[in-house]
Length: 239
Image 1 (tube, rainbow, N blue to C red):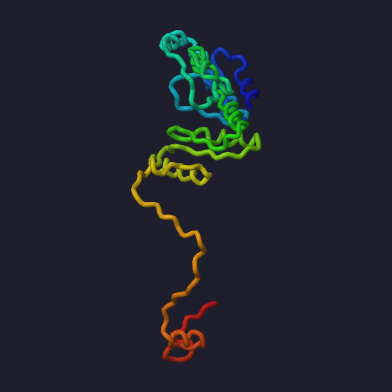
Image 2 (tube, helix red, strand yellow):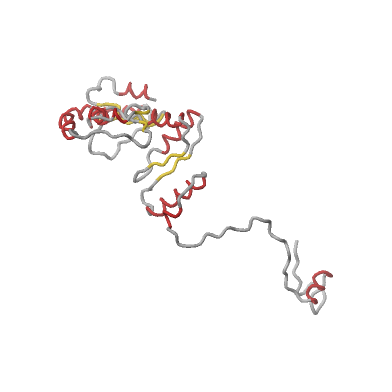
């Protein structure tokens, strides 16, 4: 939990920061390598699962303070515009107005923890129930399900791509899953107008039989005889 993660960085808060709160028990730390190794050793001793991520930049840690001014200057002249879609921010963990997405906001995004779990839980409270993780490989599906379990909520979690699997196959598979949830997929955008849509009959099928069989075979079958002979030879026995 977040509270326990905070205790892990006691005494090294100037070197290690909480970088992300992804789920009820999924926390990411960021900072100096040596301090993180000490924390990892503590976790192993206390049987707390921990592993290092393959990253090269310690985002969301105090180290980012050294580039904050340069980062702010690089954003000069960029202005937010009205959004056509509601935004729930992982900086604040709540809905955000487009006017708030200023240079100051992006500085917070660089330095402050990613509040993914609070933002996701807010989306659940807003009655959203289909989520697609757009990434090279799904890494947040488990934290999302943990959040759903903690809230007693039900939702669909889909992925766009998966490592080591054909991109097109995974993408189309997730699209098929999306369709099974009842989502209205625009198939023409995917396949184009390549054929004529034929609607199946709405009435029940007529149960007429069209079994082709000779009179001799019919008589033998109904009376338990083999065509042209007697006994069991040549007969099909059904349980």
